[in-house]
Length: 393
Image 1 (cartoon, rainbow, N blue to C red):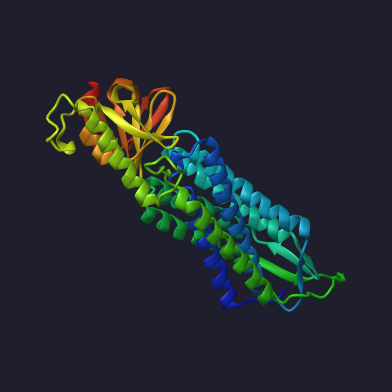
Image 2: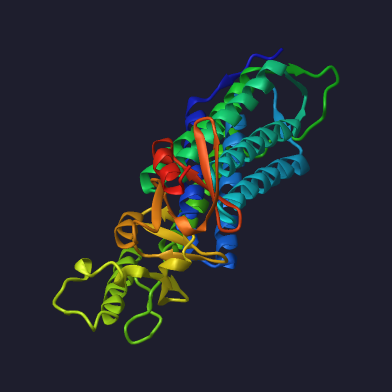
């Protein structure tokens, strides 16, 4: 058995790449509710490439940090396959979170798929090793890597997708990046290298391990940085200038413009009332028309048609029987404007129209109400009694 050592600087670089890739991926998927299906697919594809490529880069740099007494080479086809499987599985996990209703179970499933992608990538990448050595695995290491993948990746997705705030994204990124690194190095702890009985004639390595690792790390950081610079500014809907020319505003300006236009247009419906009354003090029946953005146009939705509302950072996603809409208002503001006799808060991130509740299910500490076309909306434990009272059960 060959005794191995690690180059500390490359170990640190591999962890930094993993965290950066995780942050890029999770940040790219913020605010996708404002995009159409094609736009969401493009953004999710970018996020999958960033995360899957980051997983592969972390693994590759981690392997280059291994200092052994004999040269190690990699089969190109299996190395490429390990990168593709990481991109494919992480992309599938992200796709499941951004198409359809996001539930706790779906977030956990996405974490499970992501963990499977990391473990699969690691061992397929390890099988690509060639040279004058034999790689052996201890079953304890395999089980440990799988266990870490399941627990930490689900935790990372729960942290990142529970509120979709910047702080949640940072926390989820840190956990996911450290998870990727922990899976790799815990598996390597139970991996042994031994000299092959029959020497394999190989060519001399042209680039040193340190230089190759540096190139991969720089490429990973540049790719993530480019994705963030080109995609994140457009995560909120762009708004046209007053003259109708397509000048895009910054995300914060777009948000303020959307809110201001919502106030102005809502005020136009209040002509029978005293215009001296501030917008925020209008009677509740005026706020039954809820603003939403579509095709760079501010439109209005009748409150009666709303099935449920889901918080998305400082904004909300409104769902009716058939579609989902982006609303520039926060869920707290919507709760104040909507009729409390008609809408009930089931969760800190959800408002539900009582008239569209078709069922209620409780399983231990977890509870959901079924709305619209069999969509399950979570009910937090502290709000279960209120919901049961409202439903008369």
